[in-house]
Image 1 (tube, rainbow, N blue to C red):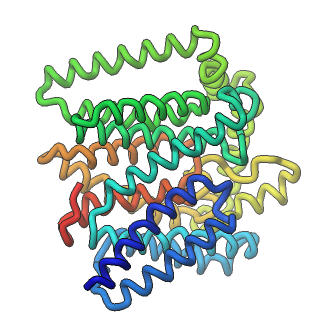
Image 2 (tube, rainbow, N blue to C red; image 1 turned 90 degrees about the vertical axis):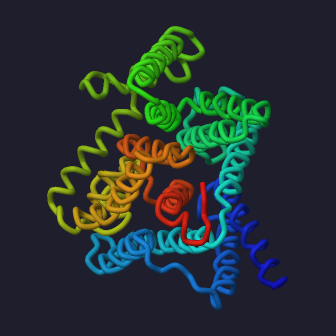
Length: 396
C-alpha cells in the first residue's frame, strides 16, 4: 500500500515536472524533454501494469486512430522522412497525454496541473523579460528561442486559470489577483494578438454562460462591449500600447483587405494561399504529416516560414479531409458534451475550459496547435472534466 502511495506521489510530481520542462524548454527535442518523457513513460508503465485502467473513451479512440492514420500515410507521403520523423514526435506527445489521462481518471490532480501551468508561464516570462528587457518583442518575435506567440499563449492561459482560482478561492484573492495581473502584463508585453483572444473569449463565454436571466445577460454584454471598446481605444491611441499591439492589429486588417501590410502578415497570407492550392491536388488523404514543410522546401526554398501557421490548412495539406475530420471529431465530442453539462450545471472550470476551446478554434486560423504539448494536454484535461469526472471520483 505504501509502495503504491509513494509511486503515485512520484508520478504526480513527474506530471508537474513534465509541464514545467515543456514550457521552459526551447523545443521538444531538448535533452531535458527527452529525459523526462522516458522517465515519465517508464514510471507510468510500472504503475499501471497491475492496475485496471479506463479504456472505453472517445479520447483514447480518436487519439489512437489519428496516430495510426498518420503512420499508415507515411507510406504514401510526399516526403516519407518528414512524415516518419514528425509522426514519431506526435507519438511521444500522445503517449504522455494518454498516461496522464489514465492518472487523471484515477486521481483528481487538475488543480495541481493548473498551478504548474501558472508557475511555468511566470518563470518563463521572468526569464525572458529580465534577460532581454520588457520591450524585447518590439524589435523581434523571438527571444531565448521562445516565440512571442507561444509566450503570449502561455500567459493568456495561465492568467485565465489564475482567474479561475481567484473565483474558486476568494479568501486567497490577494495572491490570485497579483498573479493574474502579472500574467496579463507579461501577455501584453508579448505583443501577441492571439493571446488577447485566448484570454478574452473564455472570459466573455464565462460571463454570458453565468448570466442568471436575460436582463443580466444584456448587462454583461454591454459591460463586455464597453471594456473591449476601452481596451481598443487604449491600444490604438497610447503610443507604447500601439507600438506593442495596435500596429499589428492595423497590419492584420490591412492584409485581410488586400492592402499593403507587414512582411509577417503577408507571409502568413501567402502560406494559406499556397496551402489551399496544394490541398486541392490531394484533398482526401493529403501529403503526410509535416509535409507542408517538405512542399515549402521543394517549391519555395529559402523561406523562413516552413509551416503554415494555420492549423486548418496544416491539417488539410498534411492529413487531407479524412485526417482533419478524425482530429476535429474530438473537439466536436467535447463541445457537445460541455454544452449539455453547462445547460444544467454552471460548472466553473468546465465553463473556462470550454471557453478556452472556443478560443482555440478561432485562433487556429493563425496558429498550429495539433502538435503543441500544452495545448493538447489542456484538450485532454477538458475531456476528462466533461466525460470521466465520475469514473473514480474525478471532479472539477
